[in-house]
Image (cartoon, rainbow, N blue to C red; front, side, top):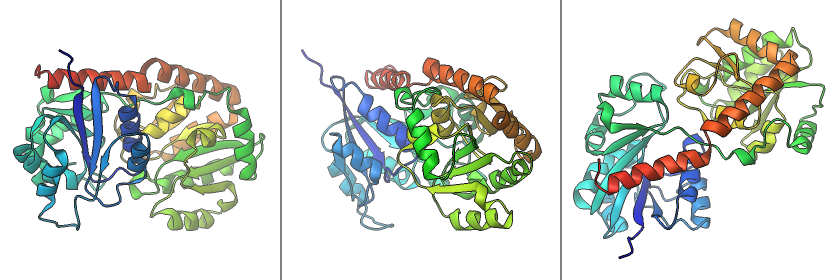
Length: 380
């Protein structure tokens, strides 16, 4: 008797572009279709760009299940959308989706369920999950953390039993980024589009422009370095509610001519080719895709010691980790790598090797497949 593929339903509010959504895309497109049959259910009418891209790649999509913010009929629509068979419900850690999980597990024929958690802490402080979401957490067979440090946070702060948390690190499509000695033409072309040449040394931050990403610190660090290293330039890739205030702040600091705001970019491998050092100044992080992709591109990293970044960046080998909030040490470390091209290149190459060895999409997908099959086969 031929065994049917595992029917996998991914449940989310929407799947817009971001680190967690990139991981989901790699996962769904990488699953062995002879063993898994994935589909996507989104609450919002507009499910997001990544959801539409997945649909275009052959992943069935149901969306518009919530007609308004407080829609009492969502549950019934969800049960109909789920249909007669779901072997595994894979839920993203979206508040609106989690609210409906207990109803769904009670009313729909779902064999097993898992929650993918990409956050370590609420940017505003306090717990990640709201009180009304506790029931959903308790009913999940597994909660997937993307780092060991995050697992400990979930145990300590959320009260989740250790045996219910599985760690699967994020993975990156290394071939898309090429490493430090490839994409030379992209490096030249992208720099030229920003009015830069090979003589400039470029520090780049790739992150949504939100308060917790702390771009203001990046600008103050840029001001410090600019006074010492005239050829240094600073590129902020991304968009968000903080863009206008940050642009104004760069003018107030007197460094506007040295800072490039690119807005949202969909060609991150090309953009990273133009960088010499990749950085984040976030107050809160878990296991950031931006740094993983920077390392895949062969770039050294300077980042704060927050979240589980230390599981990704080997301090002194693939970059520098700075005590959170110490902008003086951050500026010194970043300036060192911008000034010393040989050291930056060596650290970038070491980071690229780490990603190839530990953090590829292939490693990640195989780990998810193993977990999914174990759960569905009833060995939980």
